[in-house]
Image (cartoon, rainbow, N blue to C red; front, side, top):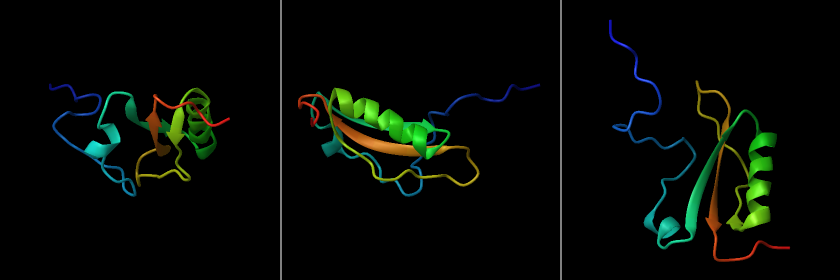
Length: 87
């Protein structure tokens, strides 16, 4: 009997529908990052984004995406650790 593989297989690249792939400009230098939040609902995803925005400069997402057949929502935002968050 074979055990099923758990987790996200490394041999498959996947982009959530409605989300563009991460490109070199998004992570061109140290201190830049792309954060993808997976949450059960929009409210939770946006709460996480707000927590990030309080600590560093971000390009926030204005909507979440849903993948058919999978639970929850996803939200992607871009961080710049070199800049201070807006006050």
